Image 1 (cartoon, rainbow, N blue to C red):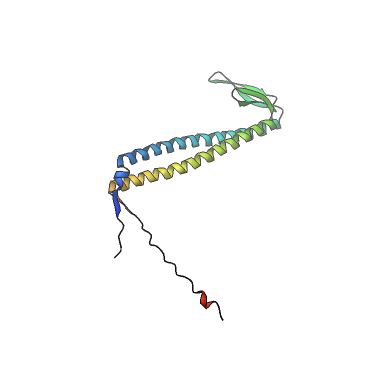
Image 2 (image 1 turned 45 degrees about the horizontal axis):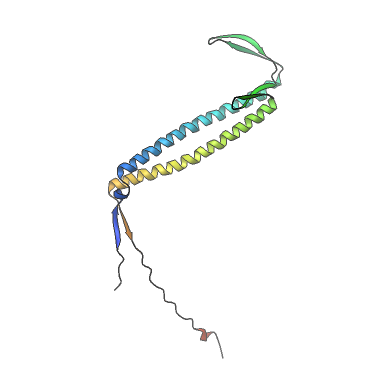
Length: 172
């Protein structure tokens, strides 16, 4: 007769209390929403940057452009934009520099690539948060349903090795 290993039966609710799992799911959902908002903001920045790149490419095509110049909050008057190949570019931390259209495009391309890498990072974080949220939601549902965790110790049986019959390999 074999010796049966004894195990334990534990309610899932004792390991993961329902309220705690629901709190964790809510916290992860809030983090996910914050990440969504940040992702939306970064995607808007990328779109604005691309529009700006098109404008910077188009402006130097002519020597001057007729524009409406803002005067106060509600008034505009006609004006002319000159020096269309000269731009003042924010380098960061309050530092500006005069750049040509070509140099400005390079700065904008670098900014776009940085923004796109941040977007990819946020998407990766969001995938992880989504998996975490579904885990906590499922755990809370299972704990509330009364799911039990059953654990049994596995006792490995010793394996008896037979000696190989070497006599059949040798012919005398």
